[in-house]
Image (cartoon, rainbow, N blue to C red):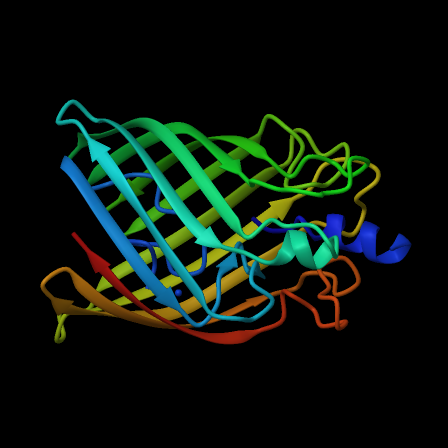
Length: 258
């Protein structure tokens, strides 16, 4: 979702949030807590993915569902409005991102959980330039969580979000979600590095970070606030009005889980 703005950059030159149950503006939640079917809906000030705005700094509505079997296997779907594709190609229609994922997650030792799976990012489009690289992306991921810290690596087995020749790109991130024990408040911190492969994308790789708080309101509701930033190249990740889509920003979102 995402760096895809090489698509934006290429087309412009010639012509790219609470947290969906643990996802503020970082990336879609890819595993539900053990249990049957759960669902979630989020309203956010914007949709940031790996630090890059997917909605050109405009509000977002997001939602999805998960099925988690007691054995550790899970599947799910998550969806959000977006604008980066239609911003990159005026006259096209691509208003939504749909994510489909499945994997296996299991506690293997006290406090240590391992997770692995596959995630498909799908963008229904119409009138999108046929010469552009397909934005649909498939990633494999592995993650390890120990108490409140999670280290995760995602590997693109297709081109990455519209970047030509970017198969083999990788994203590594470290997330900390620490329960402060004070009034249901969790401290959220994150740092990640997106490597965009391919000689055609020399300035597309970048680092992103986040620092925020999540407040549990009870009854499956929570509110999150955060500051999100990146060192993304503003000539690659650029809006139609010339703004850097990875510039630092404040963020707020409200999530309800069912």
